[in-house]
Image (tube, rainbow, N blue to C red):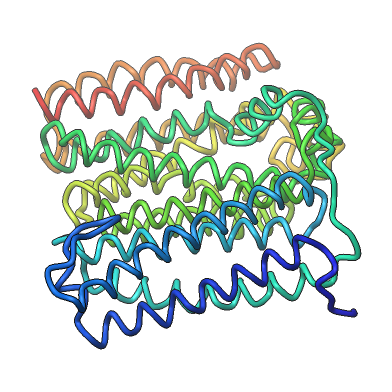
Length: 438
């Protein structure tokens, strides 16, 4: 590959690299001279001594670099939406720059911890690597691209929203909030609630987008998923990958900066579990894909618990176990309804590999085990009467649905089980919330 600066994009990225280099030099001088102590405030400060102007210069250069970064980012998203490397690389670089700025801003507050010190250093290294790669890749472009969006901006916004799987995100946020309230045994503050749910929502949405990027060819073969934005071609693979990476990275910075390290680490673990362990490997590798992969969806209540308490106790692990046991009967019911789709796509779901009869029996077994797990909270005196009564009533309804799947069979009954199990999870966590605060 021949490197050149004949495109405006390549020249702009090189200017960005030079600006960030000067920003780094000035930032180092601020640290060595202690200029930060003589200019309080953010995003701008008022110098109390001449040396404080060095800190002011650093903050102004941050603003300049941010504007330039936004310009490069906008140009990439307008003109390079088909480029499989440049668009994701530009997007990641922009998020790393925002993350570095966010952590730097937090360094002036009491929330700055050793974890953020390490994160600041690691982000700086990652930013330089991504910037260098971006300059190199953009230098191999032979000409500037042109904007070639399909549909209106409103349709594109809708497609990105669909890419996030909003219904699943909403259900995961219910379980996150349940863990947050149950962990603190009280209504959490508005600030903690906002940042936990915002960060958790970004993580869930980003993971969903990456899942659809990985499954984009598989989704074309299934009636249920063939109209998804990536499978249908309304969004490019580069856009799907970039969007997912951006949300996942941003979610970690939000969690680390405004919640706590454990919540951030758990959220990141959930992302890796779902994207790599489940989507890349388990989904097509084993009939136990849903059973083992259920751990990814079981992490959100632990995130909420860690956000409220900074630790994980037995109750948090029981919440994990509830969702872990809930996942197989929920998705196997859907798999019965969509069995032909999964068979056509080559996904080894239980009804495809072992048959519908065994799947119906497994749905009943896992439902009974799920109901038993929900009883662990009151057995260990970790929940009160409201939760106990709700768990019994909700469990009875779910058992009835599972029993009908087992005895009656058929797609209509399986679809009812699928819908009831979704409501079951939402309501049992609602009961947990009410039990914790009343």
